[in-house]
Length: 155
Image (cartoon, rainbow, N blue to C red):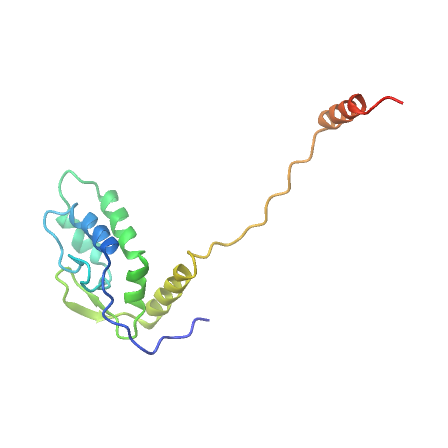
């Protein structure tokens, strides 16, 4: 079980990479949304629940919803977004960046878990054992035996 963080590091400042991912979302919209960082050093603010339904009407007519979903998914899966969401004093924000509610304890623990996994070298992936190599067929066994006989030195 992940232990709850008690000390806050807020606000979590965006890096240029975070700003680029946020810019990818804004590029799909008719107007930028203020909850996203505009430059490196701006705070990363966790989204309010259901914010995607508020962003969707701002989508440019020529852009598909799937593209917006993907860009948003990339942003909310950034390490620093998880770090911002994991803070004890983390708050959720609407499109304009106004505080809406506190991040729930369950969501904070999940964000903390994901952040720590990413920090330790990537998301944990369940290791599955390598599958057994396929058993050779009867014909392959005979062929191997005949080849072995041919290649062995004569007595």
